[in-house]
Structures are given as C-alpha cells and as structure tokens.
Image 1 (cartoon, rainbow, N blue to C red):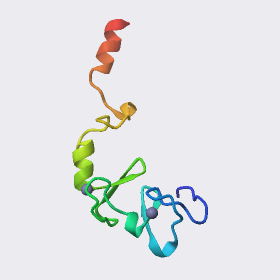
Image 2 (image 1 turned 135 degrees about the vertical axis):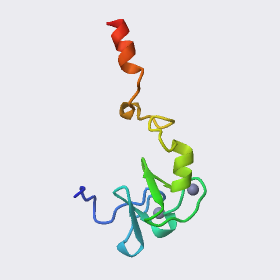
Image 3 (image 1 turned 90 degrees about the vertical axis):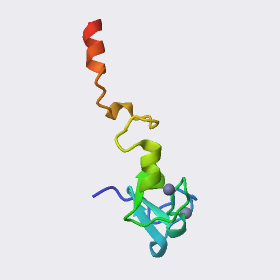
Image 4 (image 1 turned 120 degrees about the vertical axis):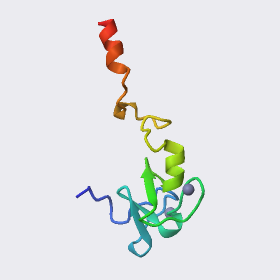
Length: 95
Ligand SMILES: [Zn+2]
Ligand SMILES: [Zn+2]
C-alpha cells in the first residue's frame, strides 16, 4: 500500500483540494474529474485509458507518441532506466 498524503490531497493539475466525490486516481495521485484529462489533446480520461507520467496525465495515444512505445530515456530524463547497449562497451575500452 502506497503512503497516504494528507486528508484532502491536492490535484496535481490545478493545485486545489480533491474531495472523494470528484476524485480520480492515477499514479498514486488524486485528480479532479474535470482535471483528469490528457495534457496534450485535452481529452477527458478515465481510469482505463489514462497514463500518468511524472505528475502529468496523458491518454494512451499521446503518451505513446510523446514518450515512445519502447522508449524510456527518450525525452524523459530517466537515463538510469535504459538498457543502453553501448555503455559496457565504452567502459570496457577505457578501462
Ligand atoms: Zn484539479
Ligand atoms: Zn491525448
């Protein structure tokens, strides 16, 4: 079970408190129903087609377009997750 923030968590989108009646949950964060939409195409999302990425919401299609279907480390700043095939070769040569 992930940690629980304060009683009324803030919506990452608008920064206002989210109440249970209007909450949507994604990526451990709570969003207003009206804020629960794709950051690129502004389409309203639900729990089945949303993708949370570092505090932002995207629909599956925009997420795939922005971050790539197979690409962590592409425009994302998470180089540590990559399985870069060149890395060990380079280390090998310099050591
Ligand atoms: Zn909101
Ligand atoms: Zn979208």
